Image 1 (tube, rainbow, N blue to C red):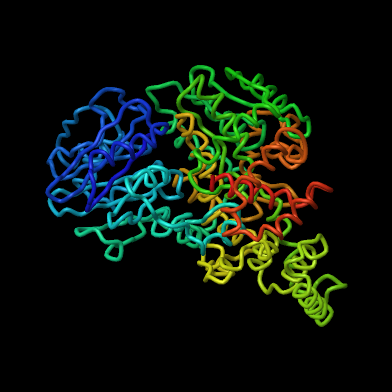
Image 2 (cartoon, one colour):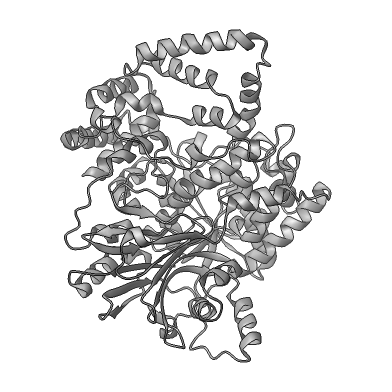
Length: 637
């Protein structure tokens, strides 16, 4: 795992700027750093290295291709690099490499096949920048699902890119204003979806795409083309539904996962896995232990609050599987100590509060290993969220199949709720919030609209400063999704989450938490062949009779007794809602709100927020809204 950065068409000191960009992403690559400069074309490329494969100088970057044409800066892992190497050797007759790094294999593959064809062959996670010395063009690319971040844009007339948005803001003279139009989107989701960022003229590269730009490196001349589409994968796979039994589906999925794990477990440094005690991570660890000839190192954090604690379950499954298990219990003080680092770790406003335990487990794990595998993405691919189950109720509401909400009665309730919503807008009372939600739900026409309504925080419209609300709000994946694209509602909702929530929330959370402590995280459920097969499964194979993630359970129960796993899902979180109302965390929150009030008032209606804050202190309502505001205000500091 590494960090990449670059400036094209530079108009300042290139060496000083690339060095400061490298320095700002030191945590992504503490082992080594370097840069390449082509002064004739005004291009400079930087790299920070976290050595995982080939720890020698032969793996140093930026790296030059054997033919001298290309310079690459690469962040990530190509798990099937040995297969690509063999294919190159067959095609070329021989292949003399300097070392054993996957970066060198990738670079030589691009030299032979080109970027698009190479990435379609590659299995892994990445952010890549490739400079063509012959043409002067630059290509940057991001992996299929967005495991690795990649930012780009214009700073003082220069085209820039980096793994860390903090590297871009470190450029001399950076003065890009805050993107005011994206503020309502942040307060809707608690994160900023691609392609946008918190700054004007700075963007996130969309997963599965390649951006190509040539001199004079102006953004309006950049070409962004997809090499992979999760939507096309879903549509095509749903047309070719797997016709074997559920047991045969589990066999095939297990085979694909084991093959993916063999690649993802390759490492020249210590490797382990997160083990939460839930279905997904336990299944991944079970297969890892089957493949390994020694005990896998597993890591869990426990919480002092019993309702959030799954450490005892994780310990029991670790003992059953025979892993080398490490656990650490954390509490209020650990979270308090972590709070000041959140803005630096995430770089822009980000308010999924499960970022706290994710950072804590990453910090603990990094003391023992440098690479950790996780069970993320099981919910999105195998119908794991309760919201997918709830979709059926929503569908019944919309179709008028509930006896008390038929036809005109439903429309009448919707109109009444709409009128009350207009009257109460901006009041921010519990009644206003509930009326607003009722109006949204009764006004929906499709299951996707229902899903948006149920997850929408637009009661916050009264919380946004009028100068921000008056701007045009950019469209994001949730807004432009083609409703009814797939045959059943649950599959449509899963695809919606894969296009936005998974990359922009879940994968962002995991990557930034790990990288803050120089820990590489890998997610085997995002292997391309595993994802394609998941989409080919009938919905009933994923969820039926209230049981979710059935294929993963069917694999897991081959290694762990079912009775060990049959318990309610607790999730991975800490009691932020409770803690914010008392003691030191309440003092911290009050200080954040007070010290940033003047800045925040440019974007937030602080008078409206004060009502929410007081209501929250009384009964704990609006804790999610409170966290969104606190993370935004802390970022403003």
